Image (cartoon, rainbow, N blue to C red; front, side, top):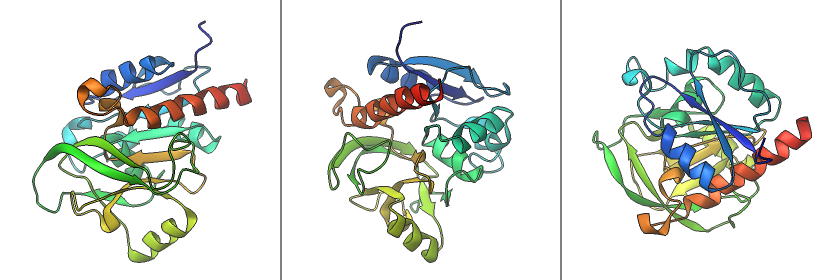
Length: 231
């Protein structure tokens, strides 16, 4: 026992950013449990859950669709329903949308090409578990690397999400054809968030940006608070 908050990272066949997320969260003060997708329960005492980037199940059928039906997702859903912080990054965002834990879907990029570069996202709200270390309107430099990153919902849903403060990040330019340049959203309760950019690849200035550390450090804060509240 270290006294550090524990974060579970779910590993699916095809996940390839799980170790990167584990390193980043460890550097920011968390202990990490890598949880295989075939498990039915999360480790006891976990304060937050991360669904990492990658290509779960080879993106067959539809991105995130098969992973959304994995045994561990029942435990993730129960954890989220109990108010636990859940973060989906890239493929994790796709999985959370397919599991209906987040609104909308992720479609192929407008240009029908894989996009891999640094982008700028604007913080639309700092009133979430994940953006409490940011300020509204702050611009963050984060890398993206996806072929199916265009977030889409009907216009009515977009307006409702904006009114409720559920749109957390927007690209400052048209990166992939996302409706309203949306880069990240939360559920209505605010404890589940998905975003396409990769904060775990932006925690060290030597890599070009440390802005992702603001998001992941806030997640570590939320993990500690949730673990304390449910102890």
